[in-house]
Image 1 (cartoon, rainbow, N blue to C red):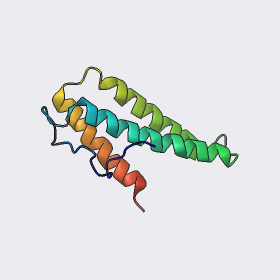
Image 2 (tube, helix red, strand yellow):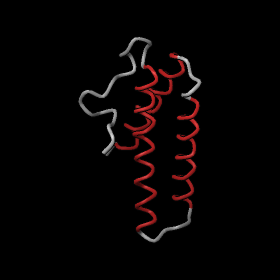
Image 3 (cartoon, one colour):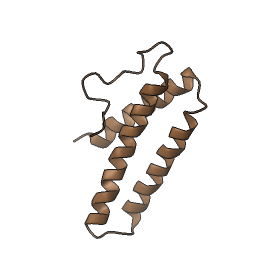
Length: 96
């Protein structure tokens, strides 16, 4: 099971030596990636191997992968921006 931004002890963007730091950003991106992978799996389990929803989920997962790669070169400020973005994104995805 992956940690997620609402879990107790999940680092907040303002924590850490350099703002959010790469680890917080990485955890945030991975939580969102996990959500998309689970949704893709559900779609395929339901027999939907094509269609707009699956395409949307797959494109969003690719975006996450690109952001995860961008973290390799990101400075503290960019890592903080990515962490905040993905924590908000996770909250929106899991709302309701």
